[in-house]
Every structure is written in C-alpha cells, then in structure tokens.
Image (tube, rainbow, N blue to C red):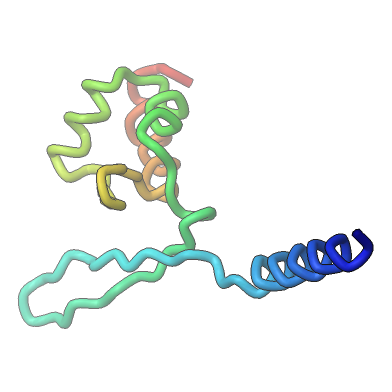
Length: 106
C-alpha cells in the first residue's frame, strides 16, 4: 500500500509541475490592414484580453441584440475559438465610454 501511495504522490507532483510550467494560451488577432501598410498581428493572452458575450453585455448594460449589432457593424472585434465567440476586453471597456455613457447607462 505504501508503494501505491508513493506512486500516486509522484504522479500528482509531476502533474503539478506540468501545470506550473504551462505557458498561458495566446490568441493571434490580425489587425485591420490599410492600403500600403503591412499586416501586423497582436498576441493576446486569453485570460487577460478576452471576455465572453455575456460578460460584455452585462458590463455595457445593453441587450444581446444590441451587442450583436455592434459586432456586425465592426465596432467590436469578435474572436472565434471553435464555436465560442469572445470579445476584446480593451474594446469593450472603450465602448463603455463611447456607447454606454452617451446613452446615459452609467
């Protein structure tokens, strides 16, 4: 029994070490290219720079359909991760100033 417990403990330590060494996931978001300029790529750390649609419409105090309209108009950048859609946190915080304050929602 002691050997089995030691093996479990070693396995758990190895898993913990792998998790500590893990690099946070990054997402590459291409920026909009103007004529005569090269395309650049921004690297965004997933935990810091993205938010879900629900977080965004709660933060902005708007409806889901209004958020969808802002995305369609290109005022907010959508980042697709498989079937999931995320928004850039910086853009949502900026939209909080130019959209929600203008509408008297703050």
